[in-house]
Picture 1 (cartoon, rainbow, N blue to C red):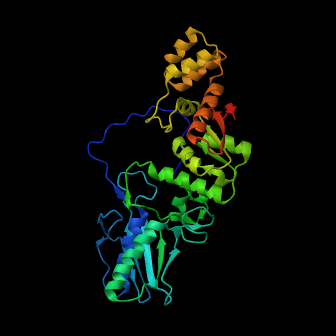
Picture 2: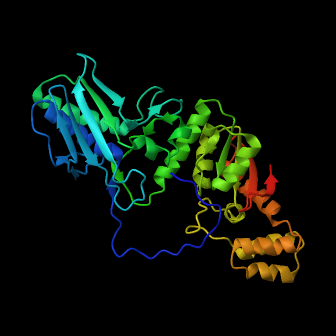
Picture 3: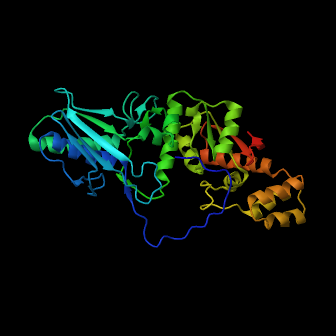
Length: 372
């Protein structure tokens, strides 16, 4: 997942002529590959296409893109199709190598090339384990159990999941900051990728908070973009694990902190996005919330702006233009916005024991306001 730019651009999107196409998670691909490889290891042909049952009952079919079998192991590979979602793992190969394990050892999961290993507590997988999340593990165990039951054999297998180039792809995600080293996570709770879903991003924020709490971090950063993140990090020298991938999802971050508090959070971002937070918006994306120029004009009036300045702000084309107008009139709108943004953040947090600092940053990395 990448960071968002601090600017508040107007984005106009045309409605697709047809519904956006759903895709499959890495967990679903790994499950299908495991099912096919296990069948081949047991002396049968690779299953192709291979059908699996997802947690909610859907039964997609996956075509094999790679297969190899020896007397000791079998490997099946599936190209992940993320549908119309801009997923970093779209078209990545997910491979499952299945081999016999020690008698009585049960199912052992291993991280192959391109799959990460958990190195910090706070994630749903224990430290030292391959970064294969609980639902994909459960899905793979289920297909193994079905095949073993048919053949009347014990479930003693080693399953190694790999994603060639997964180590490079992982650098475009927040895995390194979460302490997942060496590659990607094998993810998915439903097996289905919904196009342009916000849920994966918010899930990443939640896991970041979990890791911070588990590692004893007392002060974290939520930034709307790379510029504000850099500015705040230069002030506090945050360790990577303390930097949460907030982006536009201030509400999702603060709601999770409400139930899973950390003593202090610094929220850093651009003037436009924090104006929307100050107005009460929890999703700061330019396509899902807007800066209210009338609201900004009223704040300027409280600070002493005359009618002429207020009218100029009301008719401003962008938040940046409104900021420039207030600067020329010696009206400190950023400080007022920072104060009101903190008030809204505390309102979302309710009575949670979390102190909030707001830092508003310009596009050229200057601090416009700090509050709290």
